[in-house]
Length: 263
Image (cartoon, rainbow, N blue to C red; front, top):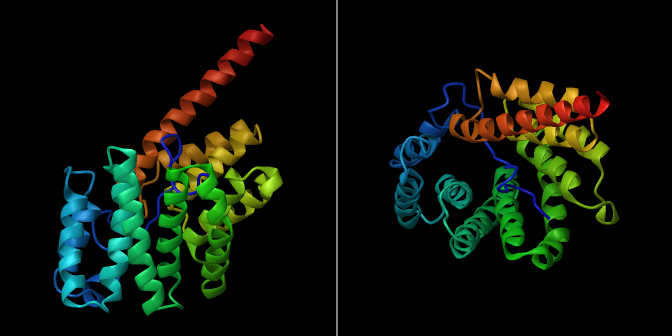
């Protein structure tokens, strides 16, 4: 069960960010001293290897000095998730990253149980950890993943990442476990209705259409992603854009093969 990211199709998460480099709106005022620098590093993880770990070190310093600082804890949960998919070089490193992300997510949920972002980053790391460890762990965690997603949308029915993750869940699950491409499509469209620039949701919607063999609709979504001028979070979009281009080439290749077969 793959929920968040994979070597073939990543799911990323973002806050609205029209500049592509700044922290989320309000982060500068809400964050403790030091977190602004951490956000700057994380927002530029595409520019320099090591930026993610450096941002984690800074946030850990803030969290160590202020154990109840939810902003710092949420940052760490998100940053460990990002590190796992962007820089981890082995399975053991992936497991360590996601376990750290789960631990920080649990702290955030305990401190602010009504914070949908706390639940999101907790469940995003949990699902990623289950997938990394293998099918059994993923299936074992499935009830908790579902409960957390229900909690996110109960707290915020328009949470774009929560909606997109629901869409991803229905996309990946086999039919016997409740997978449904049409339900997946509904959730992904709802996510994009809230945030049209959330590249992960658009990438999943394109993948959904490919599974449904709606190749023209998939190409439309991929083109929108590739040509997006205001991505929600630039470095995530940059990564997803690479996958989108590969998917477009794959669709074009299939079209050429089908045309050759007809000829």
